[in-house]
Length: 628
Image (cartoon, rainbow, N blue to C red):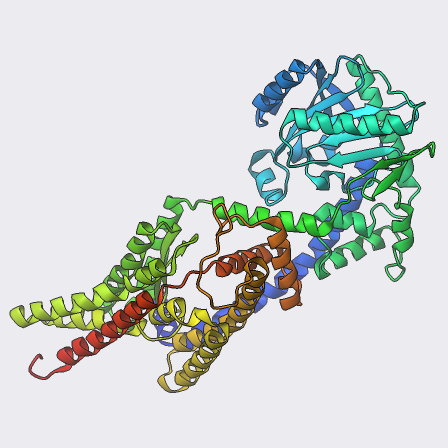
């Protein structure tokens, strides 16, 4: 049994094309299963959305008063107490704590409760709540959504059936229209209670000036506050029942926070089909029914006596906010050192396992040592110059790599980090050659030769090798046309070389160059346009723009919208949110790219060629007959 296993591993390690074939086979099987899974999942998702909306918007609210908060210990109870104290300073009185049971049944992982207060006049009621996914499954299920939020909501009911609400909840909280008479405004950026109260008072004043006969409904108890919420829910129910569909396309866009991409269009079509609606018909009529709703510029009151000014909700603004949020989350994300170490050890074991059958025990151990020393140079350099989330890992049958996030790192620092990989190894090869001359131990000769060969290969002007990255960083990145042409030529050359030297990883490097050439050209083109808009600078000018703040991280929203608009033009295929966020980050960093000054650039190129020359000298010494 073991001999069969070792024989199989030997065939795989000696025949990378067999390994590639197996990977393609398993990938195809996984893709087929994934497509079937996604199709069923999309249908179930559509069913759940429709069912949840019907339960929330087309049924009376079921509430219960809370006398103990033990079951809500996962929420930020200090936020409730702190906000309550601030409101009491403004004259508010606590009415009680309630849980909306009907919402908890629909979203059991988002159970929360509201702390209800009323101002001394009995006109403005306040609801404090913290929404947070509960348990590890809740965190996975709602990952990436704006659910962990702390909200203060202010409400006033008028005797004519009009409700005015002011809240700092995310705008998507009001994505579904509530019907005539319920006017909602969302200010997610407002955290100051005084400012939010002022916004609400301004709306009340404006409404009462337009409607002199309107009088607020006075509330003095928890029971009366709950009854007011029930009356608002009755308006929602009657309105939603009058519509041809449970959710319109515009509402769905607001709910997901972005215009529908092809996948979402398919999901929306599935939802319409479940409601017995024809997807071939235009939904314009349904959307026109909502023309006087809170997300439009004005909302007409039930009595037709005037208008309540409303804030226009722009799905593109919402999508931009989600992109910036995704960038912020990735920027603040810290990798677990234990996980990093585990990844290094696992990849090292796999590298050793496959390399042992291909090269033998001594050779693979020497190879691991040389590669580890080389990558430690990059690792130390990244640490010195403030890279974040630095991580080392091995790539079986190929080598190793060190990954890290460079936040506004100057070009000369990046060049030093690149050179700290191959240059120490080349210098060390001369030392090992000297030890060999003294001891005549063959091991030192082989070790010195291995050091110079591995590091010389890394100095080749090919991306993603160190030589190619260095030249791209200090020289080629100054002109996107030259950069892309060289990447394309390099990719084609490597693919051609693969036919002769029969090394699959060389072909892999060629494919990487061809793929990255197109993306790099698009990203740099977008960056050139954005740079021109921001600073009026022609591409290639090396003056570093000053934008205030941490300019390589804090992207102004208007600039982000400009970048996202250009991304949609350059990438006609619908991209996922995380992909758009990553491209946006790359463009922003490219806008602020700082190549070394001309003198420094010349110095780095000189060091590069010195490294190449030293490699030739070291290899020549190793091959010289007298040396042997």
